[in-house]
Length: 328
Image (cartoon, rainbow, N blue to C red; front, top):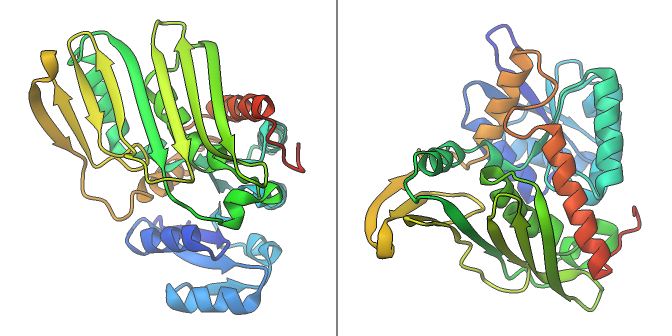
């Protein structure tokens, strides 16, 4: 970091998610978008000019080799996370890797084993895990505002057309890794009890990717979770946590902005708004900065064991559905 404690982030990739990271970093005082790396120097330079970034590199390796990069943010498609993350770890560079963390559990386990051996910080950038809404909702549950939780429902759907990253197996397509990962994390963030039963169904695209899916989890503590995700329709994206004395309605499981608290018989109690945000991505970058200052190798908000658990769940679901990637 700089002498005044600013975390210098090197962004891998120049797509829309990399742009969102750049917007976020430009709005922070504790972190900055310092460098961008692309497989094309022209794309990197155009991105750097647009977002006022100091350094532009025509390869990922050049960015990783820059001694002033404090954190490598991997913003490429899931299919391209493994190699570049391994390169960064071998160079001793801390990494924040977009969700889904890797293509499958095997890749995730290998990357995290390498990070543990090298004592290098690595975090999964599942942004919802880092947001203030998590602690707000946990507090509402633990304080008994809805009584004993019994049922969770969560839906996430976007009409995404024929985007290659959804339709192509070589890009780890399908709704699960792109959208369903949020629904699974929504359940796990608040109810991490062991899963005693998991049932699911999916509808496939003509290319064999899961385009819409439904997952039912029965947890050891008696919770039942119904999760749906789709890349083929406009979902309500709402999460509901229902208990014996009321419920919580979360307006958007992908980026919560408000939580509505209802009492018995669905009587309205209050609406809680989350703090104003830049994009919602800021919390993951700030968490990485804090963890690095504290000398940690993983963030408290998304421990490696949880990343591996989610990756294994998604492998199990894909195997049941017959959705395969070249990396499997």
